[in-house]
Length: 115
Length: 114
Image (cartoon, rainbow over all chains, first blue to last red; front, side, top):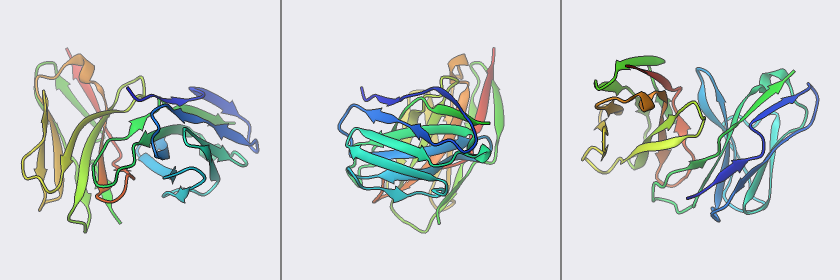
């Protein structure tokens, strides 16, 4: 079965720190996504990537950047963490065949607290 | 822009009973997919059921079924014979035909009482 692994389950950082959230998938998926989950707001797409070194902005990219140097790894970067970035971050991947309605595979999430 | 609305922040059901979770969406597309995902306390998102918009037949997966009303843009999830393990957050999600991006609703927290 596909495994999407997020490097940390819980993370506590200080305001202004540079934060890296790492995500690795093991099934050669083309597409990878970063979502942010907040109570009452559901999941919102931050960034996604359809290929290595390729990225596209989602609905809420401000304050974030991403890196995809290898197909299996997709990193979310908070250049200068702020308290309003305290949230649950979910990584997901999918095979990438358009029009098939295939499902996304999710990691278990990283709960980030910015103090 | 497409939107997904879940109007029930919380629902509860007795074990073995049936519960229906509501979802409406807005789109101008004719081809798309709809999903229900479950997120238990472990935080692992699990696909419950999927519906292709071009199919008139409602999708069914064991105790889970949907009522897909394309004209009304409604996609409700029915859970029959509810079990304690069904307790979770349930998210409705939409995806257009030519992209893998999912648009999620705000979620419904389902409690199951013995």
